[in-house]
Length: 296
Image 1 (cartoon, rainbow, N blue to C red):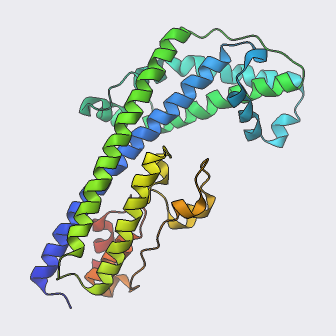
Image 2: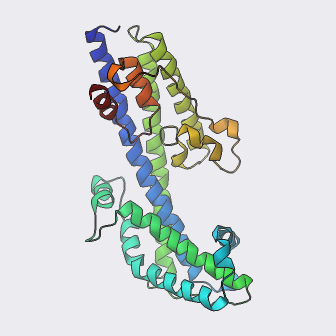
Image 3: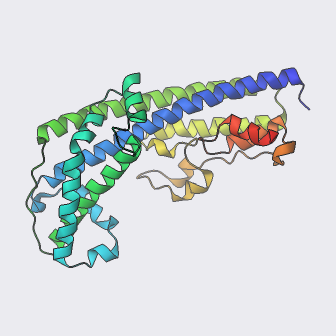
């Protein structure tokens, strides 16, 4: 059994690691929002060109359509497309307001994280929904082209030059967020290495922490390859590893190490078992969630 004074010190180490993990989570959330805005605005640009000029990468969106949609009559497909087009135009100003934020500034982060804009939908959910809507609209234009029904470019209420300018800014912001993520991961890795050097940590805990170091090392390599931040080990659940699909990345390179540890009932859980459970939990599970379960 770990002495109480040692447990307090180890608890402080875990709390520090959790704090950095939450900061990393925020960085990932912001980066995902930026990626969604980039995809959305690129789709809006595609909506503005004649269907015969749709770029090759946009043509690939056709594969996301269900068989039911693909088999609809042309008249119904046009009806769906027109409805989606109206939604995109109606929400574009709001999306551009988000895409114009400075996410290196706390005010920008707070605005996108908390702003409801007199709406019940969370800004992150709104951006995700807008992306799906815009890309589905593009997919329907591709479908119409395949069915022999050409569609002219749709005028949008914002000039293409403005949208392209926003895209350049978003790319710069994404690069900054990725650099921040790498910096935070390296900090966490150094912290965990320091924990490994602490003689008060039991062997079982050290085995888990070695797995954390290995996963963080993997995360740095993935960031350097340009892989989405959603593939980081603190984001990705271990059971989802087999479904990861990234171009030019071998499955062995993205394997998340199962940290493992002693499984105990929550009421009887030791510090080591609690740490094991937390380290293996999705990163929206806090240390407090685990220890509160332990006390209940």
